Image (cartoon, rainbow, N blue to C red):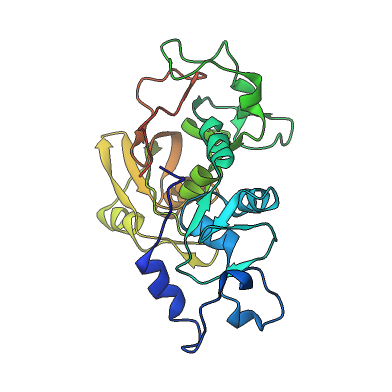
Length: 282
């Protein structure tokens, strides 16, 4: 799916609005030229590839250096090459095969593990990934040590929180979940103490600010008499706990149960599984 040629009329419309009306369409020989003013050179190939979901910008640079990227059928090997916004970009079979081998892992993170790099003596969640901790009925593929190479969390889950944590080798997945313009929902069950008045519930849904910036609208409701359900499309550091503090609540437990269309389900705490074929976050 990711390696098919992509043309985006909406992308073309949005990008052309910011370019001079007289911008000429570059011929194949102009791909990668640097002797023209930047505004007349078009858009970086790596940026277009990331915007279209072909890969991350970092991965795009690697593919370009390897000669695995084609623009309108012509191989591009120079980093920083620029093309028109409607250019046809494809990946070589070798790059597609490499992408197919990349893994995405769903972990039920326990309390006491940090999402990313080790900090303050706490153990990173990736250390839980092994053949012994793979969910017994996960038959997508067998664990291999190579699946740990470049495996990184796509989003954070605080050390004192539990639930679904995504770790991936795939830059496309990471951008989808934590990219600047990501709209993927994250759902949490939050156990709280304190009294929540109607005005406070309204503010939790929309009207609070953190670090001097207004928060995006959220969906917050009672899941049961002791737990609130939060559905967010952003993930500021300790966001839910800080939101609750602003309306007089104290969080005593927080569990992420869904990211996009992927649910934690009955995955046991401390165990993990691979993202299945056909399973997607959006």
